[in-house]
Image (cartoon, rainbow, N blue to C red; front, top):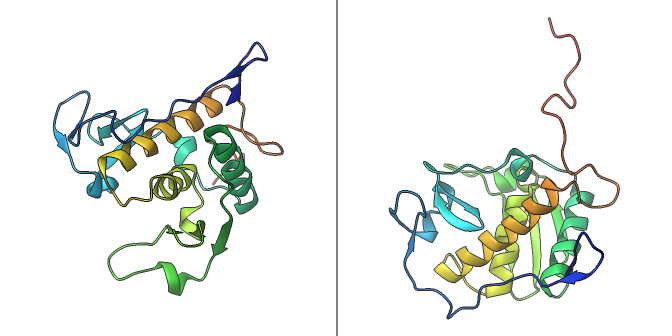
Length: 181
C-alpha cells in the first residue's frame, strides 16, 4: 500500500505467476525477449528491448548505501514483502570479474542482498528484490515483478517522493564544479 495524493491508501499491483504467458515481447517493436538477457532489456512497467526504451537516469544513478537501505525498506513495505537486509562490499577484487562487473547478489536462503559498489543503483535493488520475491532466476514472472518494482520506484522519483533525507532527483550538474577549464 502507498499513500495517494489525497492521503488515502492505494494498493500496489503485483503480477501473479499465472496472469501472463511465458513469452515476453517488446511492447513497441514486438521482438521476443529473453529475461536471461536482462542486460539488454529495460524493465519499466513492462519489459522492453533496449532499442525501444532506456532507463530514467535516476534509476541508474549511483546512490549512497544508506539511501539504498531506505529504498529497500520503502519498496518492501509498499509491496508487502518482508524486510530485506542489505550489505555492501566495496572490495574491487570481488566485483571486477574477467569479462563483467558483479553488481549485486541475492541470497535466497538468508533473504538478503549484497550490493557491490557499482550496484548501488535503484534498478539493481529492484532486480535483486524481484529475485527474492519470486524465488526465481531470470524467468518471465521475475521480469514482470522487476518491471513493476521499477515502475513504482520511478513514479516516486517523478513525484519527488524519494526516501527521507535524500533528494529524489538531482540535477545532471550536481557535484560538477561551476567552472571547468
